[in-house]
Length: 482
Image 1 (spheres, one colour):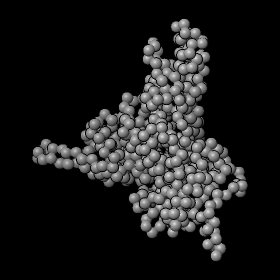
Image 2 (tube, rainbow, N blue to C red):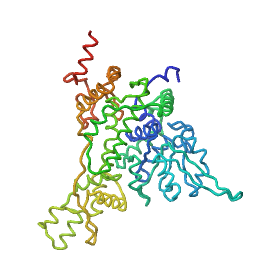
Image 3 (cartoon, one colour):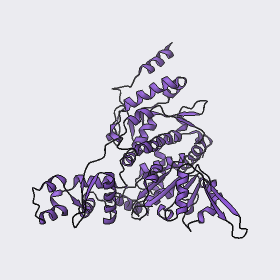
Image 4 (cartoon, rainbow, N blue to C red):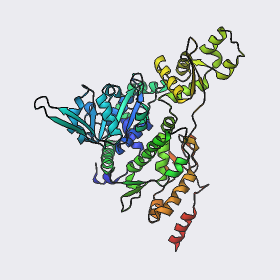
């Protein structure tokens, strides 16, 4: 790596390219998000089906026990927790305390140990974890201490009986991999391509990889040095749904993603002598692009793969469901109110539609578990009074990602800066950009014209139809002229 490379600001898309270099197919949002969360030491997990890429994705980020130095994070900053006996990890307290991050390979194994579960809970709440142990030889009591301030990462297979409880869900961001058959086909195609001229698949040069790793280490070292100032926070939260009290906790997840993006871009963000670093509009937009859908699921209590199940209920052909046929056999008839209005479906109906209509293959057991969680959240109604349990759709969750008025958010940020950080306003505004790269599609995006539903569409020409001018900006321009 050249000496000047250390001063260069890498793009977020370089993170996705790094994982693509290593063989990860798709999953750009997850690969970028998990990296950002690790940099800022925000607790998160990847929950998905076995074999759906959750471990492969996080191993490339952090599993030095398998990949050694060939991971994206600094190996010395990660402790990989593999389950032995229920107390074996505590004898490695000194090693754990040297790390900034704890990676739990399979949370279901940790869940079998009450001691480990209690440690995870304490650290996630920002508390030290202590445990008294009696030395069998000296009969003295020694205290084992695992220090707070570490980020916790985990993977969890949905087929396992162990489930994260409501308390843990508030403490951890939860991401889900793509389980569709088209994604499976893409993975198979990639694996076959790797068997010949593998170098043609590389998207990032070795020098760029070295620069990215150095930058990530610098970000992690600086993470505690900055005091984040987000002048857009109030405006963006005004667009957030408030289905119940859960959003009080989950709003921190969204704002943490914003700050993590600001941290990653710190070389191009305004910083003042008080140690404050200021969020750009681009950081908020990126957070919505990468995390908005995951966030909306969390605040509505939608479990992993729950949106896919709800879509199946919306798209199902109810005239040919097993539930409809059962009702007809019972003599309810075509015009029974229960059949017409409530449109019941069995697990078999949903499983069949997921497989044939959406190319998603779940077991009946996993499909049932997700439907029951959606029932608990109020989005499905359940009828257990029949021989076969039936469900029907009650409502769909309120949207968030597509609802944001970015011009309003921008004006709010400028106004907040002018009122409370006027000395920083000019330099901060000079660093604002309304045209930037979408890290998922690698295309240029112009936020003046682009709505969220168009995020994946390339922008061919920068727009000059509309410019977001404010009175405050006009004053700055006049001052410069004078």
